[in-house]
Image 1 (cartoon, helix red, strand yellow):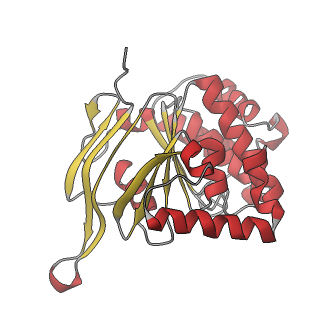
Image 2: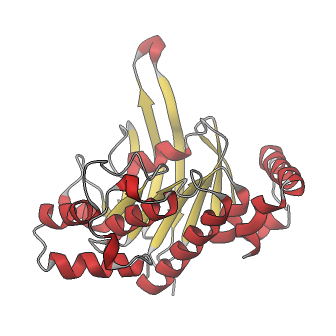
Image 3: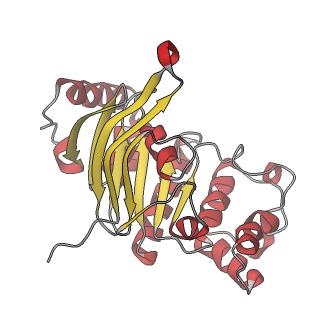
Length: 264
């Protein structure tokens, strides 16, 4: 029996400006994400993939189309209930954490906003889930490594127990060795907590490692929807997707460590 999609994006359009200054950042993009799966958005810089995530969570203006989450159309502006269901992890873990807030304050803030009790127990649990102990609770971002900062950003996203995580290049600002650790952590969390992910990345090795299906984007448009298995076998349909695969393989041959997440 087929399950209803956790996310259903229909003819999404994001437009900035008006008249001659108008820019169509996303043009009639549609896709569905099944519960518990990982869906990838892939493309070069400026392809509109991150804008899709920002539109879903209310950080970019939706000029047309429909966004359904867990069978319900999302309101505009987004409600508290929406942010209990959907959370986002940003690319730069230092920029997304307040430099003057301790880890404790960063994690307690969403609990306070949503009127949650047992904050201390929830914070300690969130730290354990991302592989950090209670000693990290009162540290500041500058006292953490890049990987530890991203673990805190993931813990903050998880602390309200959402069903969906929007992952915007979550490992691109990290060293190659730390990237694999964070990808494996995200995969474990998805399996243990039953999460659904949308992962934005320009790195095809990362996408092939985590994603079940993916959408290739270019200039704000959907080029091709395919699977990670098809991507690995280079059986893609469009010339543009094929060029991305070939470029990724060429880069991997010159620098083997870039393919580490794919092999793990």
